[in-house]
Image (cartoon, rainbow, N blue to C red; front, side, top):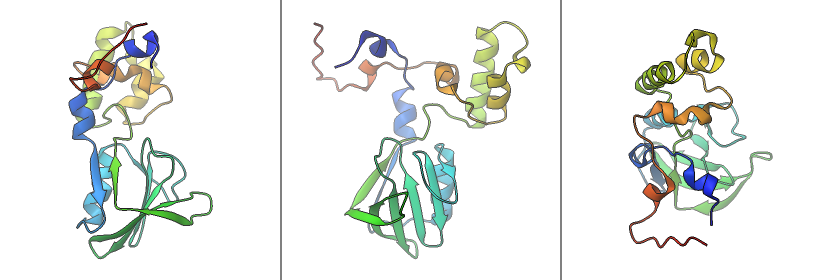
Length: 178
């Protein structure tokens, strides 16, 4: 069930979300430096201690990730380059709870704060809005690669084309209008 306003909201292109999502599973070989780079590339923020969605921390052979859409963060215990175990943990107590075999990670943001993404944003912003863009905080901060509060409302400026909820639904989805 969804409201008409929600249905009309523009979403990131499906290929962006799929191209920036990935999974990890117990027993998988993972280079921690490559994982750190990949998490940063898809918008996760490196912190000392994971507390909220979109953050990750690396402490020796332990990698904590609070995935977007997850209720609790995950802790990967590494044995060398192999994921020895994946467990949920409580960010307040740092105690591990339930063990899982695999996790799926969505991008941390609906838009790319990469050089090409920022350039697309800058070009679209100047085309959409009149005046000197350098006097706009959102333009200046985004140009520096900093996600300002409310930047998600400018998400369509990061893409040449956006998607709708219909693009994310499987082909055999039945839509009913009351």
